[in-house]
Image (cartoon, rainbow, N blue to C red):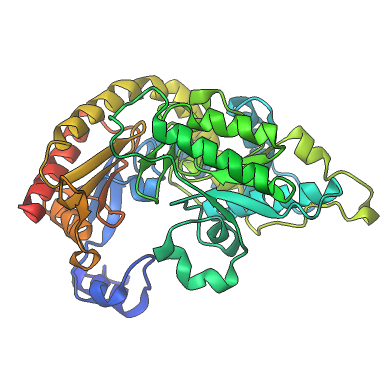
Amino acid sequence: MPSTPTTQQLQSWDKQYVWHPFTQMRDWLAEDTPVIVAGQGCWLYDSDGMRYLDGVASMWTNVHGHSHPALNRALADQAAKIEHATLLGLSGEQSILLAKRLVEIAPQGLTRVFYSDNGSTAVEVGLKMAYQYHCHQGQPHRNRFIRLQHAYHGDTIGSMSVGGIPIYHTTFSPLLFATIEAPAPYCYRCPLGQSEPSACGMACLTELERLMAEHCGQLAGMVMEPLLQGAGGMIAHPAGYLKGVRELCDRYDVLLITDEVATGFGRTGRMFACEHEGVIPDIMAISKGLCAGYLPLAATLATEAIYAAFLGNYAELKTFFHGHTFTGNPLACAVALKSLELFEDDHLLEALQPKITQLRDWLTQLAEHPQVGNVRQCGLAAGIELVQDKPTRQPYPWEQKRGIRACLTARKHGIFSRPLGNTLVIFPPLAIKPEELDFLMLGMQRAIDEVTG
């Protein structure tokens, strides 16, 4: 029997062999980073037996907690039957059952489910689907997309093309297709929990209408994260903005593609963020919470009208020529089905409401901190923006890595978190207990004090 590697061995091999995502590896090589070997509930355990509250739900995916007994059983039961069979030429029991369930819980009118593997590919599918739809309508010239400032939709070429974060996307700009940028409806003066449309939101809708009127004959669709732009800095949209976008898309015959990869499956307080304003998109991308953090799984949902445009004789080449090797993987679909059962069995959406209020109370308190320029919240997701000067909201210089330092300090208080520049992210598993949420927020508050004191 081979011996169990020591923490030092694992850390050494990690630095020798692993290239980490969104990480400056020169800095990484100088750090001693915990090696996670187990998880239970909202906690992560490292190879030295230390535990950390998972403050970012393992990259915004975890819903019910780690190593959930019911999800473990669903995975094991399915593995005992079959681990994978292609959907190219075959059907799969679990993918059928999950597609049916997704249509039942999705905004009414989304009737078709196309599976893929992650959020980037789910968005990529939506872009290709929208463009080919217009081609089948005899409008191949409708090949432009509107996107929002600060948008992030993934890291494949198409999803980067509809992104708007320079630090992620500028390097690859020669590879990307051109898009039209609309202003993001973000105003740091808007009060936390605002429920009325803001002047900023109305002004952004006015500019969006101008862009749609100018380019309407060219537009294939508009792509947006509803209510909350995650990687852009936890930017929460004002009430009414999403509904206004839907009305403009209808007016100018533009397909609305919503990216619910981060906002879906309860994160905003409802199953999908679109539900807050009664919006039904034409295409909706989902991932992350879909499989409760267990396995890579994504889907792109579309209306019957879009699906019907792809029907025709084989020789017409109307087929949607897109696919993935692990499309509709039975293991992932079985876990996703059980996760959706747990939403009902545990009354998870109802249980979220007091925790959302609890988080808002903490954020209201933190907003008074002299080095917190702004706090933003949507459901059980929030951003805490650190600034060098509060009256002018002058940011800390990028090279000071103030957000990274705060998260490293939080680790000493038993919290694992991951910043977006100088914005600290609060994005715990939905199943977090009230006392654990207090632990998380107190740890983050202490970290802010220590790195800005």
